[in-house]
Image (cartoon, rainbow, N blue to C red; front, side, top):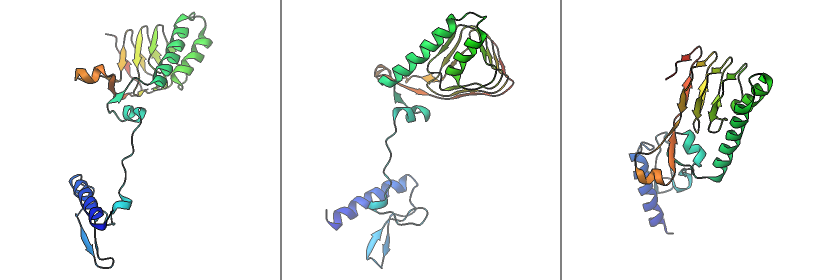
Length: 196
């Protein structure tokens, strides 16, 4: 690649970056090296060697960022099945098996002291749900959690409540291809959520 073609490529890249607000000027002539160089907003040279390459995001990173992501990954299905099995096991326990129920809830939710959930419990993945101390959820609560669902301390949830972080594109073609997005849900402390 000759100097002129490198120059044109860098100049095109600088124009693009200026439109994005990343650089201050297109070019400044550097008399020491007798070349035009691209100047960043911080005033540092921005040539071909130090142009940041955009990192490709994983589907999980896209999900965490609230961007459209592809749901048809095999490891995603395995994680969902693992959580569904834990929820099924939890829902079959007798009310008198309190210590077993709490152990299973800790496997699903992770943290929080004194969690109590009436069956039936339904979660998508579990690891995206964080509950504070003294969490209580009544019968038939649903947690669709590709995105984070975080509850503070002393939260009470009435029967038949649902918390859905997943959304689907309006475009039918994207929906058919298995794309969705997820936005987090944050519930503070000392909150009571009434039933529907």
